[in-house]
Image 1 (spheres, rainbow, N blue to C red):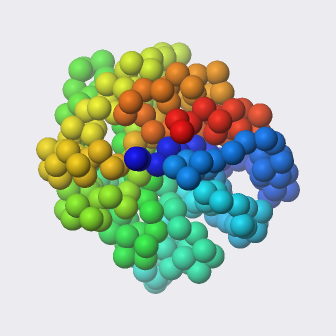
Image 2 (image 1 turned 90 degrees about the horizontal axis):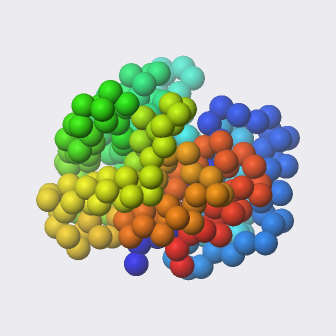
Length: 254
């Protein structure tokens, strides 16, 4: 069965002491993870070592980087390499988040290079895809997200692909006042799985966890996660609140 994952994305928030307090609060609250469930915390790079220490020994809990660079090393001031992440014990990294695509102009090909180097170092990419409001209103969202997958992932072997997690971000429903329903989430997740199946077959596509990244909260997580092709969430603002995020963890399918 596919892994069910509650992934927190802290983005550029919290001081190190606030982050430490948040992790302590989440760990202290009653929650349990089955063998098939995971909690992932994508924290700012300066906090990776602190966060790793906080969750040491916790079963099915992982610390993730929010980004990495596409090269092993070199004169790339300010960037973080996968070798650096690996040396900290980091085994998960978020790639292609909508903010990275929009603000830093990350292309599908650039993300393909990042996927490649992560897999070379046995780091699991959480690969983000999704469409903006103009794409949704034009009705071309299915082709748009299919292209994101094809140009960034379709060079991979079936074995490599199954090492990835995919996160769908309905950018049009984040901060726009519009709301994506659980049915809309399921529709797109089913489409993403069908796109993967068209290249790799149904059995491979059925093994890929696809997370939903559109304003997941404690109040809507259960309904969203109940959809057959929604395997958890990539959570932004709600992950900064211990009660909210624990509720989201406890809403994962068993």
